[in-house]
Image (cartoon, rainbow, N blue to C red):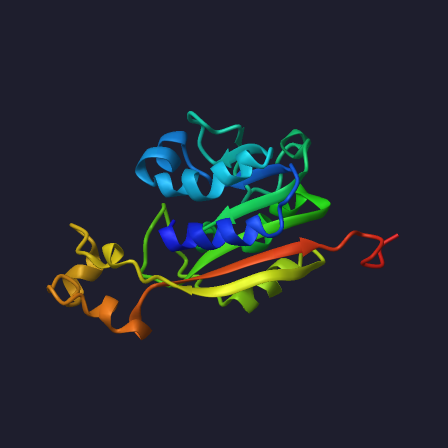
Length: 218
């Protein structure tokens, strides 16, 4: 997750999560990853929520330290016990581009959202292929994410942006990265950073679920 991405999440949630709620971070990876490899995730996303009294839980496909729920949300036959709790806020960042069956994934994801809860999603808009373990090259706009969500969860958009990544550190050469062997990214002038239209970008969206009765569901 980009540092600027965590800043947007911090600010978006800071304006809207003002009371303690249950929070589920889907695809959060391990405790070591979010506190040591990318400590800005813990610092800018999780810690501010904890300071407001929120109870955080973490879901991932693999069991490891810091993972509370182990589940593969691409499966259509998950046991009901996986969905035993619903949350006032569900966070899912940089996962949808690694999912082939996005509709099944979203069907499962929204089952965690409370009737009037919020769902925050981010997906790369402009970024090279990166397998984890696969990359479908799904690169939606915020509106396209909203369209996907609305197929599974009646909701209102409360915040969205196309976030340009301007931190120069992300454009330094990464050893072994295929893109750096095919472009001039290894040159000292870091063309992608200096040519703003070519910078990486991320689609970010925060939605509020519409309560079922308000949505016309008996």
